[in-house]
Amino acid sequence: MAEVISFCWIAMELVSEFLFCECFLQRRKWNYITYIAISLTLIFVFLYSNSSNKIVPSAYITPLFYFVLFFFCYKGLWQRRILSVIMCSLLLIIVDALIMYVWSAIFHISIEEIRERKYTYFSVGTICKSTSLLLAWLFYRSISRSHKEQLRIRWLFLTLLFPAISYFTLIIIYREYRFEGDLTTRALGITLIIAIANIATMYTINQLEKSEKNSQRVALLNQQMDIQTESILGLEKSYRSQRAVSHEFTHHLNTISALLEKQQYVAAEQYVHKLQEQQTTRVFVVNSHHPVVDAVLNQKYQTAKEQGVDMQITVSDLSELSLPTEMLVVILSNLLDNAIEASSQYAGEKVVQFSMILTDKLTLSIRNSTKPVQIVNGTPITTKLDKDNHGYGLQNVERLLDGLAAEHAWSYQDNWFSFVAEIPAA
Image 1 (cartoon, one colour):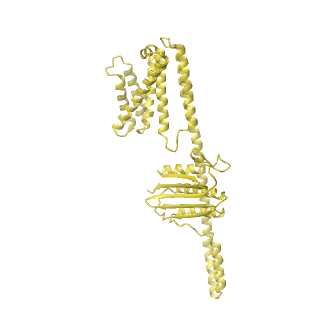
Image 2 (image 1 turned 135 degrees about the vertical axis):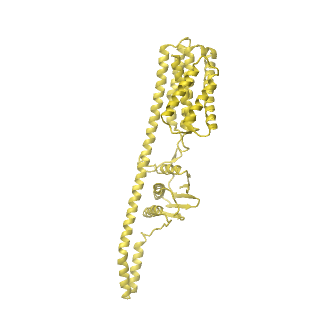
Image 3 (image 1 turned 90 degrees about the vertical axis):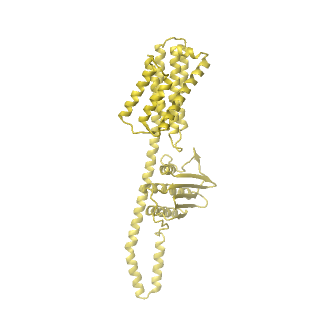
């Protein structure tokens, strides 16, 4: 039984090492050889730790085994890998020692007595390894996320709740069996059940969190598809309108030519003025020499005009812009749709100011008048009634900009909402 417990402790320690190293090292492509190496390392560490003829203490040899393993599992400077292994091993040793001394102080029992009493040593050792694994997992979950995706307090609370209850349960069980010289089967069984329940609970919580994130991703993708569909329909409408204008152009020229031939100059002038009035709604107000940007901006300009919003657009020559088309459509459509809708609902001056300037980087800025904006957890809340299917626009934009390694920020002050982004041009 002692060998099984020892093997479990070493496995938990190895998993903790992996979780720590995942935060600092770049993983190689894993295959069956990698998993064989992990299994062999686990066996070698177990055999050496339980060997009666150890020349060098396990605390010095175990990091060497781990370094050899991580040489196959991760890539990068060997100095960085050595430092990572040493740091992880030291942290695990510190956690073990700290819990051991705290236990000794609380229960007024010496370290020697802890080692002599099998159940006491089993209880303390299990708590040490469990704590190391929990801390490694929390560290991995926190450090491996981007600055926009922090570990949510709700999931953190649920994750820590069951281990905390389990620790108190182990202490209660320990007080019942603290003077047992051997491992009582009942106490051992209860402890193992608690350990398995912890693993199952943490796995379930992790899956629930992933499910929530996947649901949000699906909502973002649906919103992105809606925007792209709307843009395609808008481009189709613009194309059909242009086709109609081109088709009518010859007839207009023939009519004007006939009037001029008959020297009906006043009638010809009136006809031209009438055509100019009809054409004002079809004139493109933006010409950035980038067809996708022009199509989106002109479409949104017409939308703003229809809703009584004064949209002011400043663009530079964007002919050299090489950003992916689908990203441009989603980013511009989201920002402009939000700005136009917010400004159209404002009781005061309805204004949207937009600029898109390309130098060595692309600077994108938008500023619009709006009603007071409610901000929760650092994110503006949608004003639409159907909040389950809306409110993802700015999240979608930020996600795409993060993928482009862009710097971006937004602010709200005195009924004005502003968004600025600097996107690498290459």
